Length: 401
Image 1: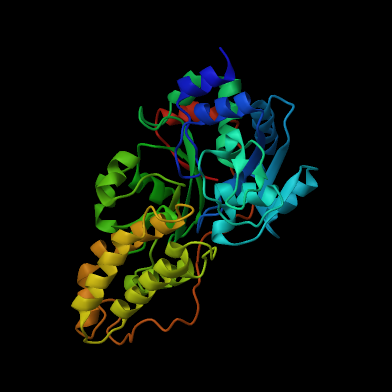
Image 2: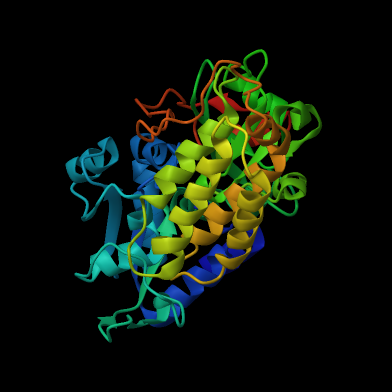
């Protein structure tokens, strides 16, 4: 069997969030002699998986990249400027693509643009760039495939241990081991080695558990969803279970909101951050996201007011944004905002009546500046060989890495 056959049998999908078939992407790369960019940016808020792969499994990552290019194509490793990941890649003598530390700069087409001497901004795709093409200005883009660092690591594992090893973990719909970053209000934020189908309570317990009074989890980052912590005991870490909330396993990020902080203000801070991350080249980013953030800020204010008008305006904007941008960033933010709007309806209603259930004396968001208390990756503590989790998967255990 060929590598493509093994990847197809294994059912590996991209670990960066899109969950597209890796076999299809690698086959297209073979057909077109595409260069490879290994995306190790940890571009999603709170993500630290790429840092772990580079720090703990660099040799396998390099081998996976070699397999994708069949040892002859150019390989570059994309990492955020000034990050520990970039430092490690440079120290290893690898060809590193220095990516600005902006949210949209690590998007697939943005890193392709940067690698071809363009700006680190998303490009409109008429067809996948794995076959080559041109950008909106007519600039030629050579055949290039982008794969997430964890995905490339898994390619090396499948080549070494086979598709049956891979499928022995996870679920039939989402097979294989996968990493997840757990952050926010947990005692031990960090990266877990796990698989789809794991009870969410097990994952959170491995990070020290949720604090007393925790109300919500943010799953999937800026393109994800808000969900009530009360539902955690009955849910598995799988796209099938998360679909009820409009979410999926996605990029593998879970954030537990601090019960001492108003969740409406937390969302306000995240939407303000998202509005400021526009690439400045299409309407949904330039105008839609700031408008959504402004509407949410109005709803978040703890004062009586004409809530119905703002609610109606926000609902209309959330429906108009998806599918209109150069990339999927506006779609994801709209999904997150819509999810928060559903889950926090009672809390928003209390704000409109002039009080905050979390903090009775709270006066609403001040916009002192968006911050994100996500986990940082200081170094690996998970030293087991890639084969060891096979035995562990039968007991469906998770370890903090």
